[in-house]
Image 1 (cartoon, rainbow, N blue to C red):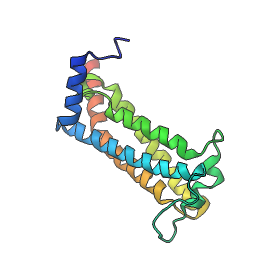
Image 2 (image 1 turned 60 degrees about the horizontal axis):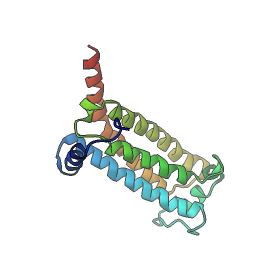
Image 3 (image 1 turned 180 degrees about the vertical axis):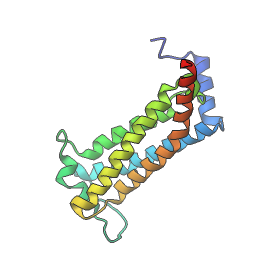
Length: 176
């Protein structure tokens, strides 16, 4: 348990650092947290529809948008008899957790964390791209909330790459 817990002084310093430091990697991590929360809100709205709390997904009245059609499709309920937005909520909460984890210098101290975050967000970006293509090719419509989440994921990918690169450099130095 001691490996996981921090003593009070270390925890207090970590909290101060996460809230107040202006390190570039922390700024990027804060961006990923914000983008993850944007995706969580998007998935939450879709989940409310998919479970029947909302009877209609609100979205801008643009041509080609039909969130009810996309998020109410068989594809949205195909895995484990669960609405897919529920999985999305857990997915983006995991991204948020990885972005928030560790000190400002975690690329040096805990390089596996930014590497894991980059791998996860990279996989998410691939899936978001596939699902965006599926919206049009399978349903001939888009969901505003899905596009917002996919766009957030792509921007998050750009934000995590510099820290992951620094972490890979750190690991390479350790090996050399």
